[in-house]
Length: 300
Image (cartoon, rainbow, N blue to C red; front, side):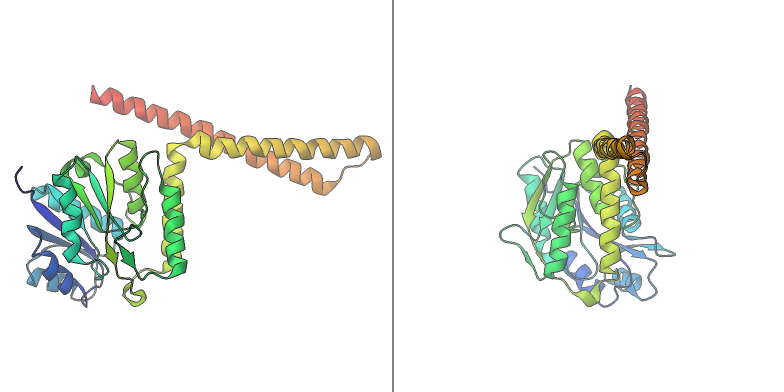
């Protein structure tokens, strides 16, 4: 089997202090390095270009997902067989790129994730942040595609994976979108241990907003994948709760001839919310199945 053509993709925003080290170390282990200068106001792009990287420039900051998609397009146009993504802030060690690329030559894989939580890996991430990562990872688990570090940006993708995935997220939610859509398309995912260095001062994202955006993105994709389970089940449970309070309200009225306002309001609110959830579940289910039928029809 011939040696794969490997391209390293680096989304970067105002990373002039670290991008040089990332490019210099990565370029020794891959065939090409592609950096997306995502609207930086410093010398990020110039430094990367001066050190031999192919640089894509966004006129304004469009987000991590948009930058990642731009690097994917460039890597595919260069003829990449394997694409490795790593951050421009230096938290990923480019010397571990080989760990992510090696599995492609041994087994049939589409995505390899560098996990800080596997034995042999590690990170100095704060406990509270680790708990958040594990929580989001738990939300992201899909069928057989179980991973330990769904938020790791240190990954490797086969050409087949990048040509299969249709990505829409421009923000941090793209990490979740990739795994959800990988599961939907039957792509094979594996993990290898890596070491990730966390530096709170190097991050350009507010950790609270980052976590909230990722959680909302995860909920969005999971709800679209299983609308009946995500909206229909809570809606049905809500109707049971509403029925309980309606019966309670009517019992009091039949005995004492008066309506307890608080109980009636709870019953009414639960009914309205439940019907909204059930209605959402039905509409989404119909809409998603129509889209699937159109996709299948277009294929043939």
